[in-house]
Amino acid sequence: AAGVIQSPRHLIKEKRETATLKCYPIPRHDTVYWYQQGPGQDPQFLISFYEKMQSDKGSIPDRFSAQQFSDYHSELNMSSLELGDSALYFCASRSRSGGRTTDTQYFGPGTRLTVL
Amino acid sequence: LAKTTQPISMDSYEGQEVNITCSHNNIATNDYITWYQQFPSQGPRFIIQGYKTKVTNEVASLFIPADRKSSTLSLPRVSLSDTAVYYCLVGNTGRRALTFGSGTRLQVQP
Image (tube, rainbow over all chains, first blue to last red; front, side, top):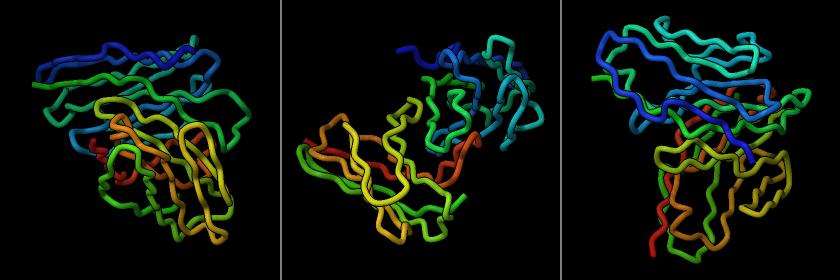
């Protein structure tokens, strides 16, 4: 079965550079979530999109922005990178099912961002 | 979302049954209980979800007492590959994001 695809899988950037992470949700999933997981930390929610509109916002820095496109893929844009941005970034998607509580989120393999 | 409390870590041996208990005293009437599993450097993976009594699937069982203030994830006959972090999440998430607390790090030894 198709899973959530994230690219790139690994990314190395210098401080103050920019980075773009991409997420391709499972086909027919209409909601995308972005999470950040620092070393030894638990995943923290950043932002989510439903039907191409931002639906919820978590602890996403102002230096970050994201959007969901017409084909439902999403991109997380990160500017003025800091050392503390080094983390695993996960994308998750959820199916269009009328909002049943029992619907689960399916996570991608993550993008490991290292800021030097 | 209701706050959850679960053990920081647990150790087990291959072939044993492992039970991880999660406390959620402030669970609301319309909240569900969901467990996720996360291997190192991988995204969390849904294991099981329940509302009350007992739920079983091919991976685990979830026991929820009548007062729903706690729940127990049961992994039958664990193997080395079950070594992971297990997260208990409580809420009526709908389309809302997941809020991960501190999970339980399970270490299975030979």
